[in-house]
Image 1: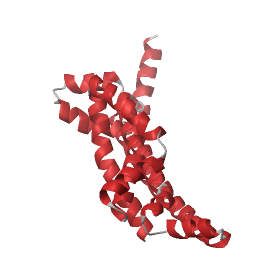
Image 2: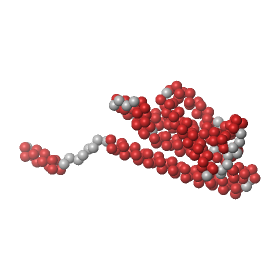
Image 3: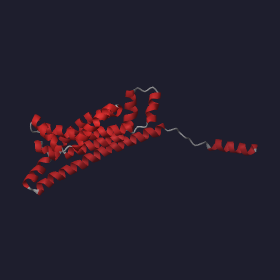
Image 4: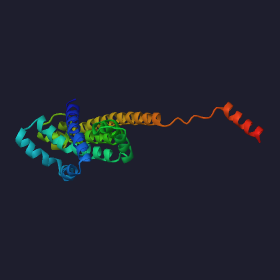
Length: 220
């Protein structure tokens, strides 16, 4: 439960920060130009580097683990939100503007619903990266499943480390299946909306078709 609370808190914080930044970066070329090097640095820098300054400022405990996890897990939310909005067809956005939609209405009713698949993939990646920081966060005093792994590593106790590792794997599988289930539901909802907006190509009435055929043959 301690691990789950840390993962959920850090994932929610990373999504609250990352998705709006991704939307702004997708709308502004200048923000995207500034955000891309920052995201590259956040993703390529080793996770241990985050722990040193955060631990110096906030001491040891759950707070530095949460901050380091948010910094480590936020980039996929920004990148995949940008990707999803960029993949929305330009014709669809122009049609929304042609019908008088404001930029906010276009974003909320057109762009975000059409990019929900990419955004949900970002949610899944954020949760998985947050969970991958559990063992590293134990180095700064965060409790949870990372503790037995760290203790087992220090004592060369394979059994203790294996118990904690299996717990992390099971939790990762459960969270992955939950997020993928939400993604499938959103995808089915979008498919139903698209199907309802398609023109109804009704089959012609057999009687009418027969009458027209007979009339054509008699006229011939």
